[in-house]
Length: 331
Image (cartoon, rainbow, N blue to C red; front, side):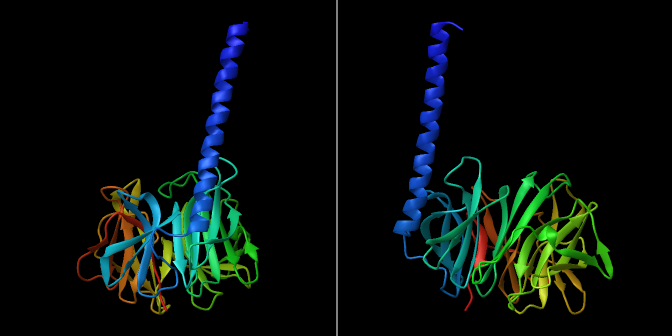
């Protein structure tokens, strides 16, 4: 290698290192600013009657936490906090975002009611789903360890549940005992994702997949068990009264890359109701109230939040344009 070539290579390496340092510094500064200075506006996670979400605006940019009043969704407040996946309940938030110490890695950041950081945990892969229990005590997150879509079968996930009161972290729900009826299932390809919590801070529902099939499963963190409830159900969301579960279901004839439609299952009777939304979607729905479901669909910029009646009647209605990851704050 000639002296000129060596100098050229050295200059390129130096430029790359400087560039990485700048990216890291800007990212760290942005995270510190969001955690220290708070919001562009007064936005809190403990105000019932509001919907918080990831918003896209012309002035603030993409993926900022934002909020609207459920009764008056036209006006939004936008915070400085940015998330790739977001959820909140009862003054606790969880934000899946790029890590500050290493490019290409991600953290689950716990937030207080003022969107200030109060803890973080490294993700095993890229962000996918997140949920906070109605009480704000339990927090769950899912990441893709391999793959980046639920449409096919060539992916693996890692889902964790954190008890914010005791600090207990179950960092991989695949370690729970899995049952289908009385049968104990042991398989190397088990995946768990899309947690939704009941009000008792011990019951949750999630998707369990193995052998090319998916189930709605009921989980018990205290007993460390998962028990299947119904086949062909993904990314569940439990209604506020705890009686029904909304989920996406694979339907024949749908787009191979987005093969899901929304359904609601009444747990006591096993009756499944298709919602009026006939467009395919890949989202974990949320409940606006006991009679209406909200969910994200692709939109002009990043997405839009729509609502549909849980009894399958009526027509879908656009609720919040340019929004993703809706979370309804309740009393």
